[in-house]
Image (cartoon, one colour):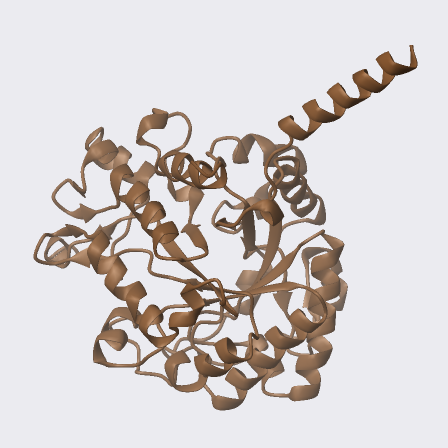
Length: 401
């Protein structure tokens, strides 16, 4: 009888091991997805509405998610601002952004989600065995706002680092992601590095978003809005050699989301690989097993509108549409075409597969996406789903196939 019980226990334990999803800690290849609560208008939701909304999308092949926007904001006094501590909110930052427009932090504060909604989001992904990161953002990519005020002061930065880490741990986050792409002053960039370094010292995993480590005219053309002043940006103040050399962060998420080839008039994986090679040439060891910092390559689930297609249409910015919007406008052409409607260039499912395979072959630590919720919902055929193409390739890597 005793032997039978032992055998039964072994069988149960074995079945549990087999049925357990592969955790991020077991994976040698990271697949991270950003999840923007604000873009999903989750501040308007009740907790009971979170799961039905997230169930519309494909979360296969994801080891980690980074929750960005809608969870918290930074107070200029170094506080953590949430929807549930409204009585403690400091005054908003009063100033102008990089375009000369008035900063409206109050509008962003009103888009913060309830505590119950945030907890439901965390619960949803944890049930899938996905690790949670929390993203720290400024007012916008070229303007710090209240975060900039904090970073200008060393003591305030250190105080804020401890508050931010405590806050992230309350929600069971494994890491902090930092997405202030262009600190406009030397001190803000230094404070930014201090914030990341202290977070890592406190035991959190740390990632930082970046585009490329060097500055030249093409970099400025590709990274700045047409009407933006060439600000003092990451290439001037970030000191990537320090971030990489001292291992200040664990991961650098390289935001090479799209790679348009004007000659081919479509996305081109070779252009993407050329962009990533800038990092490989600058920091060759970071693409080997002796790396101090992991490099992840970004994939964008949205379109690039051809410049000539915008002529006479009064379209601001790049005129991008996500896949569901492309389907609404162009129908089934959005499923398979690399140039949808002759106007919008996108990654095809074959492109996505190519990028994942190349990431593994070239020694990149993984891939990440902006955003799964820009991909087709599960109401559409799964074979056209970009995330499904990614998932199938990533899972092959996880299984060592």
